[in-house]
Amino acid sequence: MSVQTKYRAPAATRAARLADYLLEMFPPLISVPAAVMNFAVVYLAVQAMEGRVPLRFTWRGVAGALTTVLFFLLLRVYDELKDVETDLRLGRAGDPRYKDRAIVTGRIQVKDLQALRWWVTGLLFLINLPLGYPLPLVAFAALFFITWLSFHWFFWPAVSRHLLLAFATHNPMALVVGAYAAAVAVRDFGGITQTGMLAVLLVGMWTAMATWEVSRKVRARPDETDYMTYSKILGWRIAGVLPSIFTLISAGCMVAVAAELNLSRMYTVLIASAAALMLAACIRFEIRPGKASANLRPYAELYSLVAMAGFLGFLFL
Image (cartoon, rainbow, N blue to C red; front, top):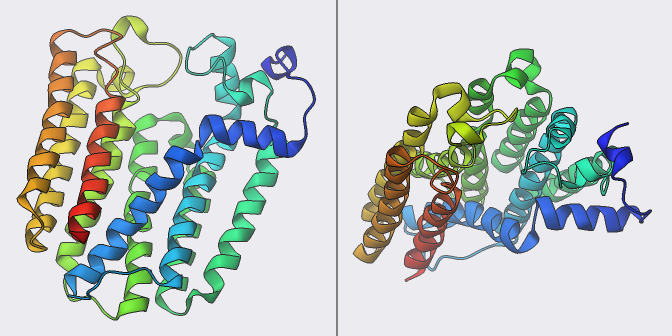
């Protein structure tokens, strides 16, 4: 008997099942602002780099922000569909991160996720076709194509079986998302001359996301399960150091861009403080590995929030 059959919830409409799923796996109050910030940092930074003041959002900017939200949702749905069998297996094994998931308990069905996938895909094309050729449309096509490839594990079966290959192929997609935001900004406000500084900004945002990705898959040795973690592959000591390395790279890049744009030094103080907390959490895990100290994710999320929201706030100031 499958887990979905064993724990199947009472019958509900597809809309109700999808709403339940989104609240659990893509909570709007967290996921939507995070995606909008991801777009806005690049979109507004391009304007600031070229001296386009006052900073503003055009209708293309709003469409681009909505596109980023939908892409983040599409990636979530793709991951869910790719990992159905793995999630069910982990749920059967009692893994605490999976046993109560909607797909495991039957509160969402595969056919619901497939329908959501096509609805989101349709919306993405409807929103982006009017944005204009060549840059926004070409950037959207490239982003959609790479995202679609990720849904098929880039047609390289080894990627689905190896966490490090998955990281190397999937995580850099954050760079393409940033490039899409830059393309929309260039279409709205003209060309960009500071491509090097834009690249530094994109690396800073990407490594912030890499910090979050690694930090949520680190466990102390006694707490490892069948779930594949970086600590299981690399060892808990190496895996525990990686988030601090990504944080340092990200903070360095964000501070460099902030200095170029003459942002307040208070931003440097704030991002340095958030980075120091991340480093302290990693050091604590190295010294006293355990279930509590392995929970690095909140520190990674705090760092990302300070890096992105702080950048936007001081950019406007």
